[in-house]
View 1: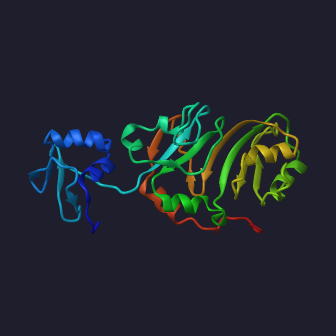
View 2: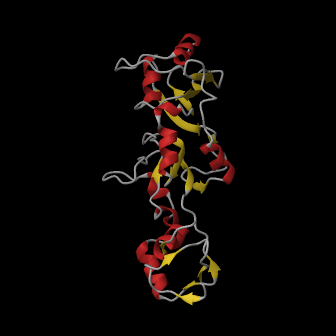
View 3: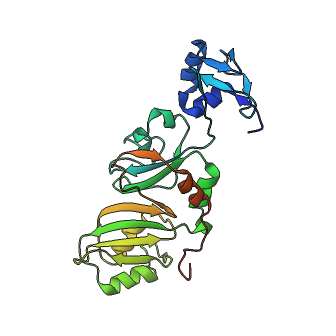
Length: 248
């Protein structure tokens, strides 16, 4: 790491609770630094040189946390809200103390993949319009989508404010033409619903299935979350525009 950080910050980031909970841990004399009991969180620590033990176990420090959440309907994509539960209410306390924030937004009634992290640089990259990170959704609508309407979605539709969407990818996924997979390379407000409304359809169900190279884990229950794997993190950090369609 090469630089010193406060012991209480390191312990909090390692999953031992809030600063207040860490203070209790220290006062209980459960923390050793290089074999010495330390009771003050102000102690400067360099984990490249110092050995920190809690209850005899070495502390594994990670600066950044990356979580995949399978968001259910009914939760607001925000860190706090006065009137509704937020996606952070679904996150275990051991991760919530790391000041995680959602990367992008899903509507309250939308389900599926949501990334949460405290890595601000990666979040900025994934959300920057110039990055053109593809996001794929499963969309169910109230009336069948015709081939002409599907082509309109792919070519770009004019939304209710006059904005023409970028080229997208769209594929019907059942014989009734009531479900489609839609991949966007931008993130306008309520864009999926507005695009379908522009071709005369109402969205009855919406689920985000992927964001760039990160796909929703099919084994992750609705409302559950897990840390990303090392490979998932690596692929997210390596995102570029190679998968964007022509004209995007």
